[in-house]
Amino acid sequence: MTTRDTSYAAVMARKNEIMKASLGIDYDDFIQSPIAFDYERMMSETGYSHADITRIQHETKVGDTPLFELHNLTKAVRSISAPGKGATILLKDEAANASGSFKARRASISAYEAARKGYPGLIAATSGNYGAAVASQAAQRNLKCIIVQEVFDSHYIGQPEIVEKGRACEAYGAEVLKLSVGPELFYMLLRTLEETGFFNASLYTPFGVRGIETLGIEIAQQVRARYGKAPEAVVITHAGGGNLTGTARGLLAAGCDQTRIVACSVDLSGLHMASNRDFNRKSFTTGHTGFGIPFATWPDRVDVPRNAARSLRYMDEYQLVTQGEVFYVTELLTKMEGLERGPAGNTSLTAAVTLARQMDQEQIVVVQETEYTGAGKHHNSQLSFARQHGIEVRRGDPKDNIPGKAIVIPERLDQVWGKVQDMDRLRLSYLKNAARAYPIDQWDENDINFLAADMKVDPIWVRQNTKLLG
Amino acid sequence: MNQIPSGTWVEIEQVILTPEQRAPTLPEDTRQVPYVMRVSGFLIERAELGQPASIRTIIGRELRGVLVTVNPSYSHSFGTVVPELLTIGTEAEQ
Image 1 (cartoon, helix red, strand yellow):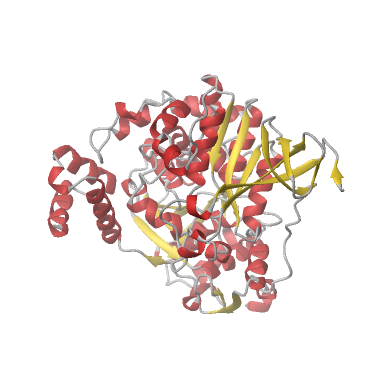
Image 2 (cartoon, chains in turn blue, purple; image 1 turned 90 degrees about the horizontal axis):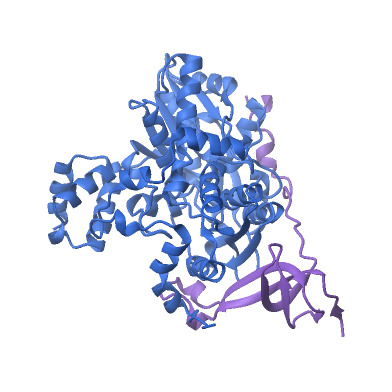
C-alpha cells in the first residue's frame, strides 16, 4: 500500500480528484469557463423530482412542518406601526424536523444518494446544525458518519452553542473530529474523505440545495391554503446561501414569482472569522456576516468545484441585524408566542419585525425556519458565556452594539430595525471577485449572461459595471 | 503509573499541523498556534494519560494520538442567569 503525502499543500493539490470520488458528480460536465457553468442543468441532473424529494424526506422524518401565525407578535408590531401597517408574521417551525432544524432537508438527499450509490458513510465539515442533520439522516439510512467540526480555540474553549452542536452529532452516533480554529477544516475534510472513501455530504452540492426546495413549496401551499394567496415576503437567515437558494427555488417552483426574498444575517463586522482570539467572541455560530457576505459575493469559495447555493441569484433584499436585537426577539418569541427556539430562525424573525412594520396589514411575511434550543444553544447560554469572556451585556439602543465588545439588547420593540444593505454594492463586490477568478478581457457573451443571472440583474448592468471596474 | 484500562471511553489529541505547516493565509494570532484535533473513542490497549494511545471510534475507525481525557463528557448548560432578559415581553416592560 502506498502512503500518500498528507501535507497541507499535497492534499489541497489533490482536491479535484478527491471531490470527484467523494461526490460521484463530474463538474467538468457543467463548467463552461472559470466563472460560467450550466447551473440549471447541474441542478436538474440530480435526477430527483420534487415528488421524489418529498417521498425521500418523509422516509426519514423530514418536512411537513407546521406554519404558525404569530398573533401576539403581529399585534405588538402593529401597535408601533403607522396606521394600516403591520403585516401578519408567520413562522415555519422547522425545529420539527428530525435533528431539530431545516438542515435535515439538506442532509436527507445526500444520505439517500450515498446509500443508493453504495458509499459506506457520509462526511460533512460543518460547525452548524448541519452536522446533527447529517448524523441523524445517516443513522436512519444505516450509514456511518463523520463530522469535521471547528470546536475550540487554542485553550480548548468553545462557545456553548458549538459544543452543543458537537454533542448532538455524537448523540446521533457520529464520529466527531473536533478541531481548533482555522480554515484548514477543509484540508481535514479532504484528508478524511480520502482516508475513508465516504460520500461528501457537502452543504453546497445540488443534493444539499435541492432538498430545501420542499421548504419553499410547503410555504407556498400552506399560505395559499390558509390565506388564499402567496406570501408577499419570505425572510431567510443567510450564511452560506443554501437556505436562501433552496427556499427561493421552491417558492418559484410553486409559482410564487412575486414573493420578495429577503435575506438576513447578524452583523459581526470587526470580528475575523479565522482568528483564534475572535472565535469565542461572536456569540453566534452561523447566520452571520462572516459567512453571509463572502458567500453572497463569491459563492464558489466552497468545498465543491461549483456551488449550488447562489444567493444573489434569488435575493431581493439583504438586512443586517445586531446580536442584541436577535436575543431580544428570541425572548419575545418565548414570552409572547410560547415558543422556545434556537438563534438561527430568530435572526430572520428579527428582520421580519422590521419588514412587517413597513408592510400593509393585509400582507404576509413568512419567517421560514426555527431551530431547536436547549443547553448551550439557548440565548441565555450564549449571553452568559459572552459576559464571562469580558463582553459587556446591557439593555439600551441596539445602535451601540459592537460585535465582540458590547451586546446591547433593545429596551423596546420599536428599536428593532434591520439595516438594509445596498444590493448593488454586493453585486459589484461579486463582479470584482469574478474578475479575480477570470480576467475581464476574456469574458464572452456566455460569461456575461451567467453573471447577470447569478446576480439577478440584466446583462446590460453587468456590461456597464464591468466598464467601471476597468 | 496510572494505567487507563482498555475499553475505556477516552479522548485523544493529534497535532494535525504545526504552526509552520499551517495554511499560508492566516491571521497573526491563529498562525502562532498549532492546528489540533481531538476525537473520542474506546481505548484499544491500556495507556497512560499524556502518552500515545489508540482508540476505536464509535463508527469503528482506529485513530492514534495522545491520551488527554478519560470519560470525556459534556457540561455545557444554560449559563448563569442574564437578568437583562427576564423582563422582556412581560407586563413589567409595558
